[in-house]
View 1 (cartoon, rainbow, N blue to C red):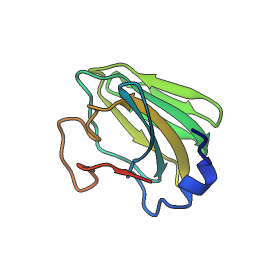
View 2: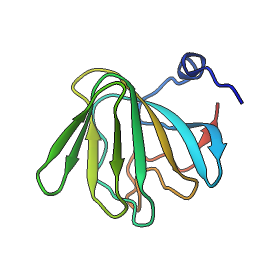
View 3: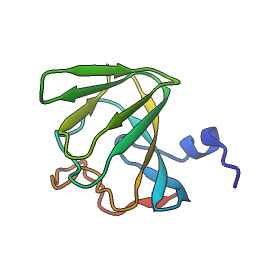
View 4: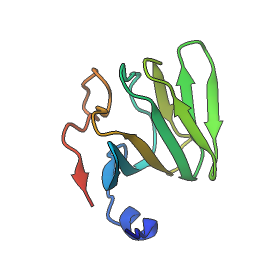
Amino acid sequence: MKINLEEKYSKIAGYWHPHIIGALNDNYVKLAKLKGDLVWHSHQEEDEMFVVISGTLMMDFRDGKTIATKPGEILIVPKGVEHRPWTQNEEVRVMLIEPKSTLHTGDIKVAQTVEELKWI
């Protein structure tokens, strides 16, 4: 299955709303546009992988560390690790590869939480 990322990104209107573009074994491949920040959260049973397509993704961790991930780089957040993604006032485009069971903001529910993912 061939997927054009630019075509898929053009269908994404808002920020912090992942959309499914494919399935790979027991994982979804998702795209999202990010700007601003998301709530602190963790995923108790799943690792998360962020592939940065454009912009710089900032990720805070509770141990005080902040990691900047640039285009062409990936960041893997191990299961159970509390994290908070954010951007520096720029639109950041990411691809997420994570188990189908992964909840958007883990057990935390806020206004940004997406409870039902959609395919684009």
